[in-house]
Length: 197
Ligand code: HEM
Image (tube, rainbow, N blue to C red):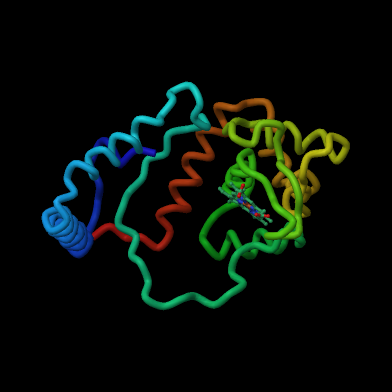
């Protein structure tokens, strides 16, 4: 992801002040522990493991910093329940102000990773290469249950519901369209509730 390139990051004064405070705290820590050399080595080791050929791939997503942390926790149960259907997905995503297209594009995030029985009760990956960001989630979804890959009930509804399905079909045949829409929806998602001052 890259920061909003054309205009620069849009953040409010409080955010800038917080960054300034964090920077001062770090400087004080580095001075008190005389740990500048190890910090430099840490930065180098963090960056030095990078391999330009083995990143997950996928679209570049513009990112605007500045969403506020909250000091209070929200009530449990707002995230989608994988065992439910289309109306539940719509209820949850429409609450965020997102659309059917956003629901399908963002579900394509399951191109990465896998489910584990000890965490969710579900088991396995959605795609054959769960470390690669591509449109294979949609291709596998259209193949149905036979291929041994994971399909949550909330994944399956994307092919059962006609309004969702047209996006699944589009993304399965046009990876560029998926990357474009995913980047747009992911940006919307990551900026929910953020109003630049
Ligand atoms: C994993 C449900 C949307 C990204 C999972 C798991 C479940 C789940 C049950 C398995 C958790 C585990 O066993 O560890 C859902 C439901 C969604 C949804 C019901 C509603 C549409 C999303 C979205 C994204 C996303 C919008 C990102 C854009 C991921 C990723 C993993 C994952 C990357 C794998 C994590 C790992 O490998 O540890 N999701 N998810 N999911 N989800 Fe979703």
